[in-house]
Length: 239
Image (cartoon, rainbow, N blue to C red; front, side):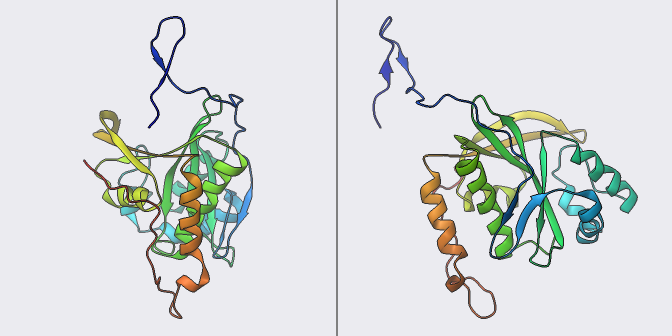
């Protein structure tokens, strides 16, 4: 690692100069097509019923959401979903199978164009999406959009520190564990310590190559099982 630069007037160490300090664009209503499915802007009329069918009765999907769910019925879910579409931050996307059926949602959030920092969050993977190539591919598609189209510098993943599946997913997708903010928030009247992860633009080329190797058709056998695991990074959790 190179030693930090020194501020000429005082000799104090300072960070490296950012050669392009311009603001990043905000996310928009794009459609990202992959081999196994697609990411598109949430549309309650087209996606609402399908999403409810995908998540109804799956109360465990909402345990670690900080402020909503589970939902007692379709009407309650539909009201919540409708309230999401008008938001600019978080900005909601639907995950769709090749047939077009919606099977999950996630967002880009904590959007800071001036610092070119953004987070993927509010992730809801229905059982139809979990442990599938599409579940991984949509993370790849969104990261491509963040780094290559919007040109953000920092991509974040945060979750309840007790949410072990989310923490494992963050590492699998190539995010680096940064630490835990203790008593970070009160979520559904309970304390939440928050685990922080990040990926930087300088790290993305290596992460992208690993995703592309894993998503290649030859990595799956005739039954759709992976031949090699996704290995984006050797980073492991030290907490």
